[in-house]
Structure formats: structure tokens, C-alpha cells
Length: 444
Image (cartoon, rainbow, N blue to C red):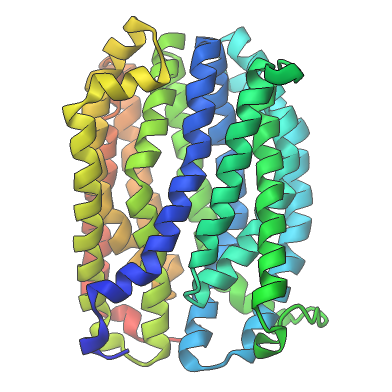
């Protein structure tokens, strides 16, 4: 891939299946929130805390698989296809015991953690029920991550769209049946939302497995030979993956703490914030798709010894990402009442949520730049630097949030301006490092 070959169409070819997959994936969040919003504020708040806690923990697995994905992209660029199967094997050896540990954490230890963190007894009770059912999905979620790292690393991203469509359809149907007890199914409320998500994740994994057996020639990549664990190769993955694991776990943990701060403002504020969280992830769909494409293509270019065109690639991805987010954001700014009414028919929650929605819409524009630059740093393989950037930015972000809520007693709208702080600082620190050119040396 030379400089002339870095076209918007090429970037879009890699990114759009991931974006479509993200749309399907986030339909789960959308439908869970929309359905639970009809159950009540308590269910909505419990779904928010339980969902974020679950996401924070599975970031450990996602971080490792992202590290594997970066190395797969590098080997693909270098033409070392046979090494890819070994990377997948080592990933499975690591993620399986990690999944067992995380299951215990979610199923049992999370209740103790939540009991100290949540003030509302009603929300604590419902969140505990959610975690009890949701824990089992961790095995399927980690399995999906292995396949995702393989296909994204090879830039064969269309299958991700198919699997997440399966995921979304199964989740939507089961949400409708299990949350409200339609068509003779048990009325499970929050537990129904959690169980629907678990079954949806299992369905996506089965699709990944079936597609791989049908479409992929295992011999091309020495895939699933399950050779004995290779400590040197494993440590190579871990060296790239550990900073990403820590960064993503800390990032979601900080967001969980943010929601705990919001919970102190009352059950209505937490319910509104869960709605905003759902809208926010929709705004971020192009960002996550292009961010994944960024670390994949950057690593691939370096594998081709084309470090001199990396910044040109990143600039073009920023343009595409910002444009996509700007289009979606305009809908939120122009029709906020319509969007809020999709999630709830409570006039008070709608009135509280409209100004927050406008703030978050603008914040997403900052993040559309920051995330691309940040994933450019990760794609170079300098994941220790990306971790350092994240730690600095999150420290400032959390301090800002704590001060505006606990010192200045700000309302929910001001609290969400913290997203401006996060997006702006992430952009500045990531860009500053990329411009130094220090990432051009070293190997993975």
C-alpha cells in the first residue's frame, strides 16, 4: 500500500463493515434501554449500572484481543500468514482461564462491590439480579473477541456485520419476550434483559464458528492446530496487549465511577443518564468503527515498511470519522425531544434529558478526533504510550467530574460536560506523541 493507494474508499472498505456491526451491536443497548424505560426508573438505573460494570470487566478480554489483532495485522503486512494461527491459539489459551475468573467476579464478587457503591437499595437489588444472569455471557463474549481479532487483523471485516446482525435480532426478540413476558414467556424484567443478551452472544459465536469452517482454509494460516503454549510468542502478545487491557478496563471503570457520581444526584438523574448513555453509544458508532480500522491499517502499513504514510492515513480517517459523527449529531441537536421520547414517555425525564443530549452531541465531535488519533498511537504498537495518555486524561476527567458534582453541586447537564474535557485532552496528547515520530522505531 503506497501513499497513492491510501484512498478514502480503501479506508471505508475496511471500516464500514465494522460500523455496520457496531450498529447491530448497539441495537442491543438501544433495545435494552428502551424496553427497561417502560418498566420504570429503577429498572433503567439497574440496567445502566449492571451494563457498565459488565463492560468494564470484559474490557480485559477485549484489550488482549485488540493486542492480538494489532500483531495479526502486522504479520499480515509482513506476509507471515502461518504465524497468525499461533497468535490465535495463544489468545485462546489466555482468554479461557480469564473468562473463568471474570465469571466468578461477575457472578459473586460484583454483589459485594455494588453493595458498597450504590446508595439506592432498590437499584442495588435489581442490579444484583442483572449481574446474576449476565455473568454467563462472558464465555461467549470472549469467544467472539478471538474471531473478531482474526478477521479485523486480516481486514476481512464483512463477517463482523453478519454476526452482529444475528446478535441484535436474537437480543431484540428475546428482550420483547422475556422483559415483559409476551407470548407466554415468563415476565423477568431486568433479568430478562440480561438473559437475552447472553443468548444473543452465544448465537453470534455459533455464527462465527460456522462461517470460519465454511469460508476459511485453515492451512493458509495454520489455524486451530492448538500447538503447545509458546511462552515467547505469548509474551509478545501480552507485551502489546497488557497496556490496552489496562487502558480499556480503567476507562470503563472510570465511566462506572462517573455513573456512581450521577447516582448520588438521584434515581431520576441516573435514569436520564442511562438514556443519554444509550444515545451516546449510537453517536459513537462511526468513531469505534473508524478507530478499529485505524489501529489495523496503521499496523499493516508499518508491516509493509510504509511508516512515512501513516500520518496521511490517520488524517484521512479523522476527516471521515468527523463527517460521520457530525451527520448523526445534527439529528440529536435538531430533534432532541423526539429522540428522548423513544426511550421514555415520562415528561420529567424527557425535559431533564434534552439539554444533556445537546451537550453530549457536541462532546461526540471532540471524541471523533481524539479516538482516531489515540488508536493511531495503539496501532503503532506503542501501547505503553497509549496507556500513559489514557491514565493522564482519565485522571483529569475524573477530577473534573468529582469537582463539578461534589464541590459545585452542578446539575446533570454540567456533569456531562466532562466529555468535552476527555475528548479534547485525548486529541491533544495523542497528536503530540504522533508528531514526535518516536513510534517509527521498534518492532512487535
